[in-house]
Length: 209
Image (cartoon, rainbow, N blue to C red; front, side):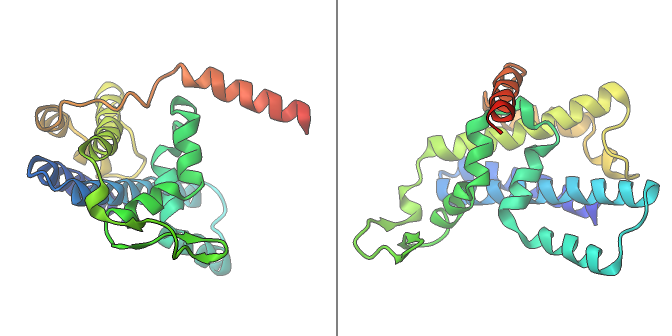
């Protein structure tokens, strides 16, 4: 299942690029966020299978509780960047954690009114996929492209990225070259410089606890 989720994530990502090239920016953004969710699902399934094989297998109740997370979209979005979280902007992680990326996906898909804790905002502006700009879609696609390129880089350098047989065959030299050919943009969201900001935030939190 992890192998298929990763394969599907790559398919969705490449489809998002095609949609962007045809100037269907809302659909390309929606497709890219779906690719992010499948990436997160693949990573978490691989992580679960690895620990289940080396640690004690969870009870059926615990397993069902964990499997239900695979239907939690914000959780999967966060899982896509969770492995190297401190190398991403804290603003991005917070944006995902606050479910704002999932709201963005809904905006890119449906026409409707904004929901608030108090109910439907009937006095607010109508949300519409037609409001999605090319820059927003480009940023999201670049993020997924960067994640996949990094997976390819690590796999080619270390001869392994995942612990499930077959998954590494998907993130090979052929995919890396194809991604570089199809998408030239970089997100600029991932950098080792963010680690200092994360450490500073954790230190301040520990002091105030």
